[in-house]
Amino acid sequence: AITQSGAVVTTSGGNVTYTGAGAYSQSGALTSAGSITQTGGTSVSVTGATQAAGAISYSGSGAVSNGTNGTISSTGSSVTLASTGSTMALAKNVSAATSVSISQTGTYSGAGAIAANGGTLSITGGTTVAPTGNLTSTGDMTLSGSDRLTLSSITAEVTGTGAINLTG
Image 1 (cartoon, rainbow, N blue to C red):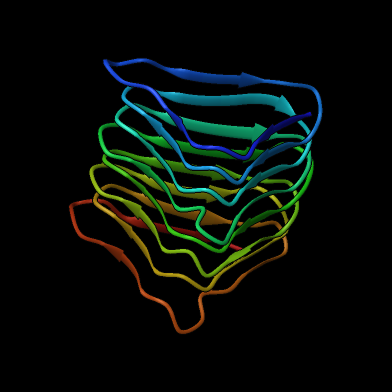
Image 2 (cartoon, one colour):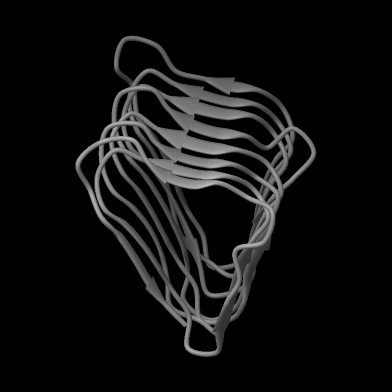
């Protein structure tokens, strides 16, 4: 298991990589002048603010979530969030300078706004997909779930030339 409770900062393009077989818990702020990559864990819980100039990727076989102060922002690249065996619950905002890719095998939920400010946005896989935060992209927006897709009282907007693809 990996637990990050204090702040971690890299400068001069330095990357941050976490690899562990157990649960990943990040309550401290994480700031990288390069990329941030977390792989190999079970559950992933991000409650500390995360920002990187490069790409950000979190993945686990268990539930993936962000909450409290756990905003996730890539100011220069993409964000990828994946649960290969469970749910995705994003209570806080996720944004990327390019694309955002979110995948899960269970349900998707959360009030966090998701913004792909220079590319595509996809929330795919799993059963019920029910975001309660606004969704924005400049490229294609793809939302799909095997059971049900629910967009209630939110805005799903493509601000560029992309299309919106909905499957549920």
